Image (cartoon, rainbow, N blue to C red; front, side, top):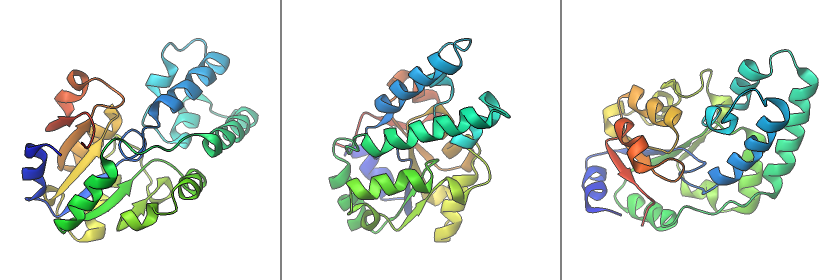
Length: 210
């Protein structure tokens, strides 16, 4: 943990984390999945995997596969198989980082666009996961997708804190804008995009949690 991040944490009451690309180093795997899906179903959209990053599946379907029920079902089926077989490796230093902030007395939560089905795979791979956080918010808990600040505002309200009392960790542009819009301190994790690219949306940029 950097000295700057440590100093900021002393001033906060809650830490809220995105899942993919922040807790788990899974973004490269998802990029490969959506690159293949984009090539197969939307060859007309360059960088499809980059464009949909940080969006919920419902948001992706509404914008890129409207009224294509059969194709949506096919993607869901392929994604379910993919997520059951993917690797969920913690970002370097994350487990110790969680122990450190628990000692500081901060409340902790996951704020993810992932759904219950995906989280079942996470819990299977990591039975300890639920015990690491005070609350886990998933896509089913929100009506608006990132970059809307709704999910982070819900997280703050859950703990009874003001947004400025919270710190949010994100890697995607939509996620960073979500934390920023909520009025929280923004930590950009450069696991998916370069430090320079996410710096304009972050108060602090880190490579990982070491």
